[in-house]
Length: 156
Image 1: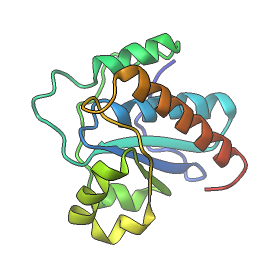
Image 2 (image 1 turned 45 degrees about the horizontal axis):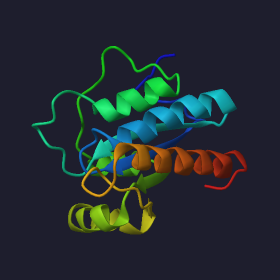
Image 3 (image 1 turned 135 degrees about the horizontal axis):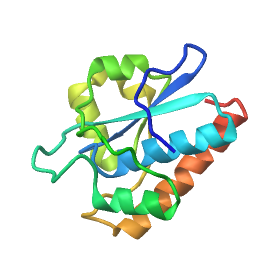
Image 4 (image 1 turned 90 degrees about the vertical axis):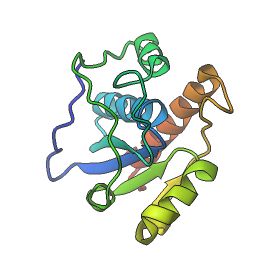
């Protein structure tokens, strides 16, 4: 299974997952979502960005993320991209924007992308400072699968 960052066809809707670093939570949500959307035939494609990526992250993706994906049988691409910072163009290109933790991300979006704040759906998935990877990854899995159920029923 491969992971593509290519632009989806025009009839495919786009979702943007946001976290702080685009290294752990949003990357897991993006890759899991794309895997499950293809498997279920849901015409959506995810991408992810960070609101304040840390340039000192050791590599393109968290070891917690890659380990959790392996456990699910999802193969990460061999050439993973580095974390990317969100831009206004990313918000504009998305049909749905989800920030994975309201308490952490609402202030960053309000400060840097105030025109988009009302379009963002906020989840409550903790980062490593508040929860271990088992808890956060399990929460993301549940939320992504609930989202896919909702989108499959035609509700954005």
